[in-house]
Amino acid sequence: MSQAGTYPMSEEDRRIQEIARRFVDEELIPWEVHAEEHGGRIPEEVRERHRRRAMELGLYAMNMPKELGGGGFTTFQQVLVSEQLGRATNALGWCVHTPPSWAPEVVTPEQLERWIVPTIRGERHECYAITEEGAGSDVDAIAATARREGDGYVLNGTKWHVTSFNHADYCFFQAKLADGPHAGEHAMFFVDKDTPGVRLVREPAYSHTFPDSHAIVAFEDVWVPASNLIGEEGDGLAFTYAWFRYERLMIAARCCGAAERLIEEATAFAKERVQFGRPIIEHQAVAHMLADSLTELWAARLMTYELAKDVDRGVDVKVQHARCSMAKLSASEMANRVADRAVQIFGGRGYMRENVAERFYRELRVDRIWEGTSEIQRNIIADQLAKRGVRTLAG
Image 1 (cartoon, rainbow, N blue to C red):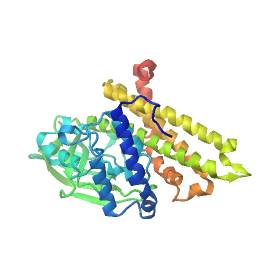
Image 2: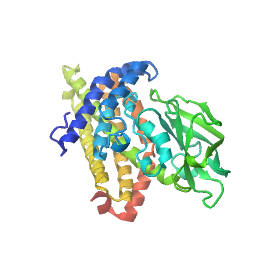
Image 3: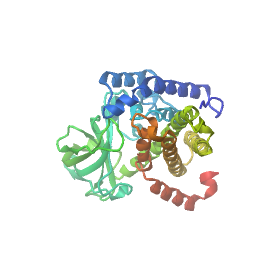
Image 4: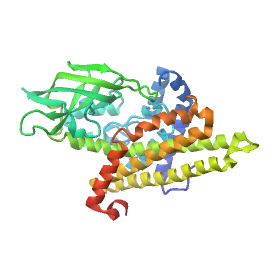
């Protein structure tokens, strides 16, 4: 399903899109089944080659400023790349790492040099320690605390679903301030993983087969200097919301890529698979599933592309917040429906782990949960609708 000529893009946009597509087709997809059969892992030399190749192609840290060593891509270009990465299963696309794009504008020069720039160069890797057992969709319900002590802070709390903890060497830790003029407000800190008091509790098994764990991590009387505080006391939630907006948009893009791959694979199979004397694509039940999938993909893709363009145009951040929720809701729900149909079209083959539809059927399910559930996205959208009206959000 070539996109050439179907959506207005600059020559540079198309060049970047094609580079990302070839990278996925030639480097990542050939390793999907191996990864699935080996707990999500591929040989270390291959994993390192993928990372190096992503850097050579300019895809690594594509969301970071060029002056810091990043790609300096527009939001639309990042969506084009993320969409292609979404066509690969087993999180193989995570070799194209995107550090926190909100960070350069708020961190200190020391923090920039110690954590952010090395992450852009691929020398360091971060993870987010935000979610807790009793605080998922309701981020403000976190129980983790930061208490001022001398010229630093003492951090306490147990975090869940700390994605990529096994590959990271530092965390973004979010807590509520226990004392001082901002008591009860959120603060975010850099915490190196080897800081005394940081303890891995366990790494639960999840439905998908990814090489990155989603660990439960305890922070027990972890002392960090005040220089590890990001921004000011009370700023922590704003950084999380910025991260949510970015991730929700990129999830939408990846879901569009996954849906495209599924439709391509299911269509090719349906044209070859003969039952009752003719290819199953000629049976209306199968043809309609493919037609619905393609129609829904086009709608979600247009929404995602236009949102990315809006971000580049500098649309009001609160409108962005609502539209990021709309794009994630639409694309994640769409991709899950497409995956379900693809499994059905493949039949028994679609239930085999070597089949792309089976893997996406498991992997895409989390996109309706992480970075805000579908229900939370609907709450955000409805709240903004009441405040801003239809024409502002969908005009």
